[in-house]
Image (cartoon, rainbow, N blue to C red; front, side):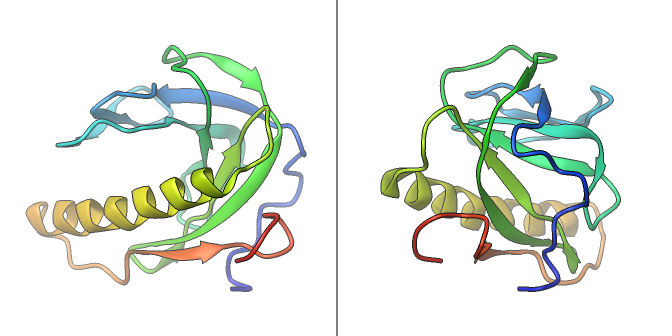
Length: 149
C-alpha cells in the first residue's frame, strides 16, 4: 500500500474542518457546495484538513469519531488511524481522528462504512456518466493504524 502515503506535514493532531456532520445525508465539499445526497445517513463526522491535499487533488479527507459536530466546526483532534481508499483510481486516504483510541468495533464499523461508500461512489460515477478507475476500500495503513491491518 505504498501509494497511500500521507502528505508531508500531517500533524499528529491536525486542525479539521467538519463538512458533513454525523447523521447527515448531504456530502459537502470543503467550499460548502453539495457533492452528493446519500440514501443513508453518514454515521461519522466527515471533513478535511484544510491546506493538505490528497492523491485526488482534493483536501485530505478526515472522519471524526464521537458525537455530532456542527458543519463548519474547526477542531484539533488526534489521528488514530488511516484508511487506504481508491477513488476513481487515485489514492484517497481517509484519516481517522478521535479523542480516544481506536477500538475493534470502530475498525469494523469504519471498514464496513467505506466498503459501502465505495459502492455508492461507483454508482454515482455511473449516474453522472463518468467512466473511472477503481473505487474501493483498500484497508488500514500499517505503521499509522494500531492493531491488525
